[in-house]
Image (cartoon, rainbow, N blue to C red; front, side, top):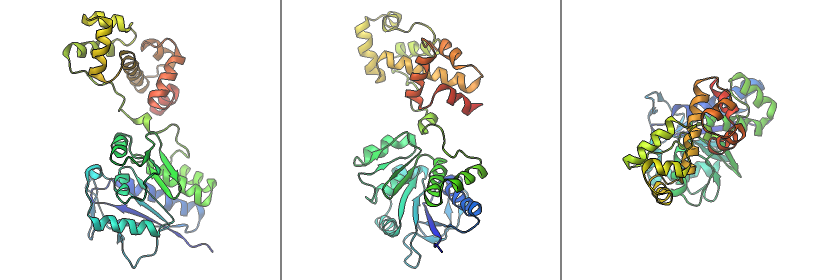
Length: 320
């Protein structure tokens, strides 16, 4: 008989509870669906005593990370916490996590747990992901990492990383499929009322692309006008005339103020208007295209897919 696989989740103080409970519920449900014990799950604390989560709920760890008397984990995951982007763990904590990694068959992280994992050096030059809002920060602080910003989860050799929060469940489901097959994984997804394969990547949930206001009051007024009237003609000559500048001078200053060309900014503003319509009404993509200033539904679809990661129809279904 095959031995059960131990799944160990490192939970730092301040951990996001879903980063721990979500994946562990998937593994526990896999045991139920397979009608045998495939996984043994445990929570690892960074120090002795209860772990206080970001919501205030306390967890009692099964053991402390680096415990020499423990069995080797099959899968080791480092859960995320809101403060981990600026957290400086002790050298002994990093050594303990590194020791657990060396004993595991595969290892990875959920959400901002990637920041803690990166400090071990064990994911250097690997493809990884994390929450969309801090992906650029992770990439800049650890330039050897290949951060895939839109991915829900990434597999690279022994490394498995998940994006923000609930994406930890997507990763866990993929690990179940990897270990015991798609049929069990599909049964788990059905029981937990989750997608077996979620449509689109995590950027469909991002608000990162929302158009930023310029610092100049004249440009802020223009931006408010564009946002309120997305279907109007917002060509560079028309916008330049509205603020009393030459076309060339307007384009140069606008880019310096916003970091985008006027055309790119207008497209982002129109996509934001489209998102608002799709989220708050039953307006069809064709109607959205017309009301938001896109030439036709195909132009809307291409711009929306490029910026949001899914089509307008897929995005609309998410909110209905």
